[in-house]
Each structure stands twice: as C-alpha cells, then as structure tokens.
Image 1 (tube, protein in one colour):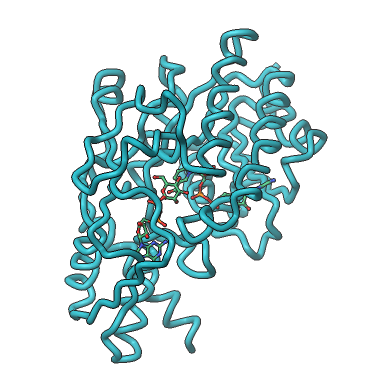
Image 2: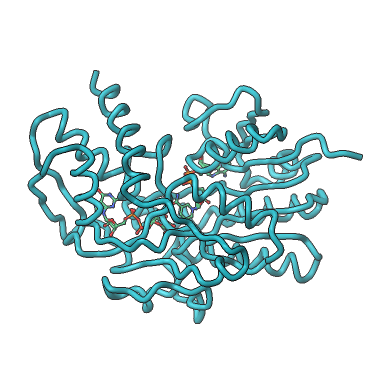
Length: 326
Ligand code: NAD
Ligand code: GDD
C-alpha cells in the first residue's frame, strides 16, 4: 500500500526544516511538519503541509509523527549558536530523547529512509585549536572529544543511526552540517549564529546611525558558512544517495569572523567601529569542512559564495530589524 505521507520533517518549524518543507512541497510531495513550538513561532508555516505541534521526545508522539510516512528528515533539536550551546549543555543533551525515539519509531513503522542532521560539533576539539585549521575530515570525529553537551548528543545519536542500520537493516543517512545560514532563520533572542547576529548588528547600526558593533572574541577565529540552498540540495542528495556513513555537509570557504563582518559591511555600505568581547562564548578557534568524501561519493559540494548568500541574508535580517523597531 502506498504511504499516506511522502515525507515527515521533524523540526519543521525550525530554520532548515521550514526551507526543506517548502522545497519538498514544490516537488509535489506530501509533507508532514512536526515541531514542539506553537505554530505562530514557526519560521515558515506551509498551508499545503500537514502541520503538527508535538513534543517528539515522547515516544508516543514520535510514533504518531511517522505513521504512514515514506521518509523522515530528523531535524528536531534544542539548539542554537555558541551563545546557546555553551550555556545550555543539559538542554542540548536532552535532545537525545528526541533523536532516540524518532529513530526507534521510524524503524518500527517501516519508514523507507531516515535522515539525521548531525553537526560539525562532533569533531574532536583538539583538532580545532588554531585559526589556520586543517579542514576536518570525517575520520577526525574519533577518538571522541566533541563539543561539550551538544556535540556529545550529536555524536551519540549519529552512532545510534549506524547501529540501527547494522543491526536492523534500517536505511539511515547522516550529514554533519557546518554552520548553516540564510533568510527565515533565528536572528535574535540568543540562539542566533554568527552570520545572522552580524547581519542584525550591522542593520541596527545602519538604522540607528551609530556605527559601533560588538564582536564575540578577537575576530580572528575562523569558520566556514553554508548557505541554505546548498544545505537543501546536499540534504536531499544524501537522503536519496547510496552511503550511510556520516558525511560533511559544509562550505570549505574559510573566513575569519572579521572577514565575515567585512563582507556584511560591504553589503550594508558602512564601516563600524568593532568592540571585541573576549569573555563572550567563542567555541573552537578554527573550523572548516574537508569536502573530499562528499565529492568522491556524489561529485558535488556546497559552492555558493559567502558574499552571495550574505547579500540575501542581510536583506532579510534588515527587514526583520526594521519591522521589530517600527
Ligand atoms: P532550529 O532550532 O531552527 O530548528 C530545530 C527545530 O526543532 C526547532 O523549531 C525546535 O522547536 C524543534 N524541536 C526541538 N525539540 C523538539 C522536540 N522535542 N519535539 C519537536 N520539535 C522539537 O535549528 P536548524 O538550524 O533548523 O537545525 C536543524 C537541525 O540541524 C538540528 O538538529 C541542528 O542541531 C542541526 N544542525 C544545524 C546547524 C546550523 O548551522 N543551522 C549546524 C549543525 C547541525
Ligand atoms: N553567535 C554569535 N553571535 N557568534 C559570534 C558573534 C555573535 O554576535 N560575534 C562573534 N561570534 C563568533 C563566536 O564567538 C564564534 O567564535 C563564531 O562567531 C561562530 O559562532 P556561532 O555561529 O554561534 O557558532 P559555531 O560556528 O561555533 O557553531 C555553530 O555551528 C555548528 C556547526 O558548524 C553552532 O550553531 C552549532 O550549534 C553548530 O552545530
């Protein structure tokens, strides 16, 4: 019998989930979005999807959410940027209930394919101590020394996917996302990541005329940032692809946080005085994605230039700041 719902997006009220659901719907698929947040807080609410508010850490809700579903994208997690994960380690680790119950429920329900959104935070801290970091290869997750709290949950949960595949023949796909950004994401409130935070601060500077911004750390720490369109393409490619090993899904365009600020300043057409906050959350010193494995498996890697993605992100964040102030 055909499945009643082609795809479930767990965490469909979130940033990536909202965009993914839009993309799946545009392909003519039937989509069920599930999220713990009330619907007025969802980043995107798609009227042509089935939209369910439920706490997926509870196994009964997890079972209901995957009923009669073909594929499950498991994006639900209690997470955010460094400002959140450094100060909410227990909450981050509690997502292990959501990850575990969703995997269990999907396997029991005979779901055809299951996608788990892991993170670059699984990588060993000792390999990310310099700004001019060597890009992280998938094997660098072991010996295990992940980000405290959030990274441990992700490493445990991606490993559980592996054992469900090995022991039960359940088809699981795992991506290790590297910092994803774009419009219609979290831009304020404490969970925002550096790209949205920098866009917000510069938009506020433009609007107020006070060209001064705070930057966490000394600005010389490095990261790579993946635009949402690359994330959507890579996520679906991995889900429908042949390999069950966890794969980096990230840009390899390494920048310092100062360079990120430079780009947003260019877009906004202003220069700001920078105040460096050395006691703010900073995470690892340097992080980049080694894309050899994704190229080898799929002949593709994220390639949208940071300046291009930030242009769209800044425009969206600027509108939010304007609207919030009016
Ligand atoms: P997000 O916070 O915008 O979305 C996650 C959603 O999960 C939220 O809407 C939240 O309400 C929901 N959720 C949390 N707990 C839940 C529960 N118990 N039941 C139901 N829903 C619940 O985050 P995002 O940026 O869209 O990230 C999606 C996934 O990708 C997450 O698993 C995240 O850890 C992972 N990831 C994201 C990034 C990134 O840079 N955005 C990087 C690495 C990994
Ligand atoms: N959030 C934020 N806000 N970060 C800032 C700011 C600011 O205003 N100013 C400078 N930064 C610096 C942080 O100190 C950090 O060194 C760097 O920018 C990146 O911070 P985030 O974007 O918050 O997080 P991250 O890259 O360390 O980790 C993120 O990506 C992981 C995947 O690569 C997090 O979102 C993790 O949850 C995610 O798994």
